[in-house]
View 1: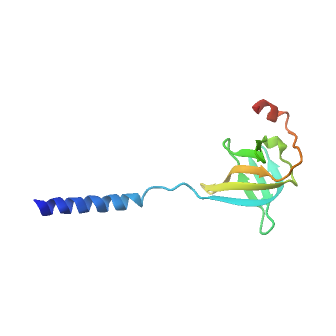
View 2: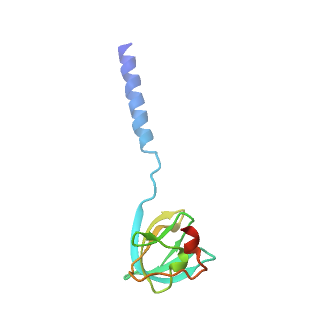
View 3: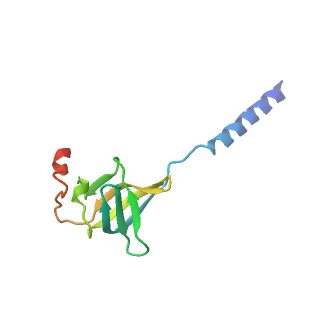
Length: 120
């Protein structure tokens, strides 16, 4: 009886150890800095040119945060030629930015019709 209980305990422990390796992990977050080359509002894409390497295309979602320092800005404040840092994850074959941070101290202005004022 005692040996059966030990075998059952060992089997349960092995099962739990094997199951813990099967849990899905969230995608890893990466960062890249560069200059905005293009923004496509219809396709929800932003193209960044890093200092080294090829251009990188990101597909933003509703959850993507656009900021300048600690302040949030709307997507309309981004323009080609601005320096940015993008924190992103690879999701289903696409690079999805979680945060796009403008690297300038100059005040920004929305170019798409006042959407910054609507969020405040």
